[in-house]
Length: 218
Image (cartoon, rainbow, N blue to C red; front, side, top):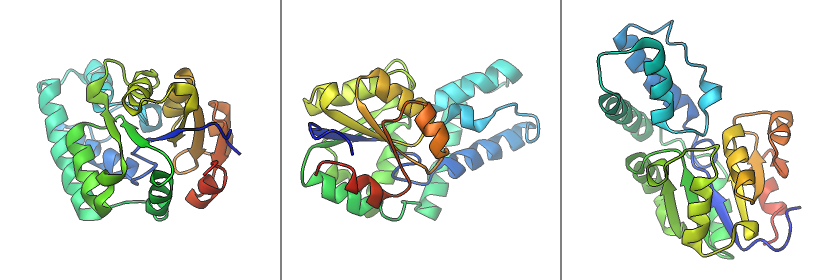
């Protein structure tokens, strides 16, 4: 069980609240196919889980030097992703009851590598926005995960010291960011294995949202 001194919960979004990692990949692949890099884009997606769009595009540009500017590519990818999200509405089963339960006991925040436009689309689903006291995007900090900046800003906005915050994550980069921020980290096995998540520094790894709820002090 996570320590009983926890006063706030900070959720990641992609891979924790919404099953969006496959849609992120699909939206990138659509564009790379159009650019002629369907089979030779050179990007290993698991390396970038939990980071920002810009980080992925910088890696792609370093390899291929496409004619389009990075901001054009980011906008195009965002448009593709929004369409996929609207079509699929991929909120994980079981996460809404967990969010509702936790929000009745303590302030909860959202800290994600996604941009605000994408966050807004997702939080419209199941009227999720009402449960979050603060919403932090990769656009709000200078360094994406695994830098702790995004979680430290969420802690500040929630007015709760990092040591009293618990992060709920699914990626290696997210776990590293949470631990670097001095927070407790609970990981769920939506993206990586139990072994990978513990090796990355997670304090607790759970295989369901019910298991997370049972191991938090609320």
